[in-house]
Image (cartoon, rainbow, N blue to C red; front, side, top):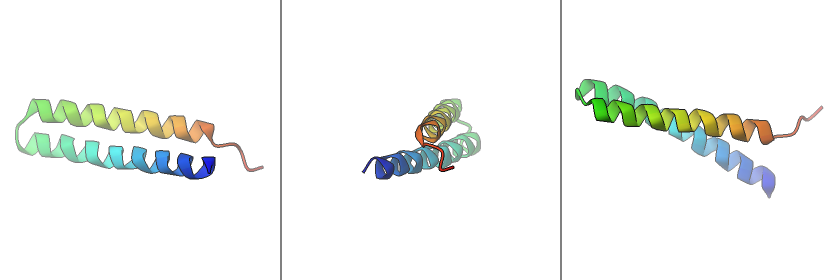
Amino acid sequence: MIFIMKKRSLLFSILALVFGAFLIVYGGIDDSPGGQVLGFLVFIVGVAGAVKSKKKVPDSH
């Protein structure tokens, strides 16, 4: 059960990375600095979530 939750957390983190990158690009095309900042923040949250969920996974050695 916990392994499934960790996979879900990693999946949401990856989705946040993709959505953040999309917002940065779209904000640049639309010339919207607020959109780019929001995209950057979402991207950073995605990176932090991915690192946090990856640290919790025990080694399979």
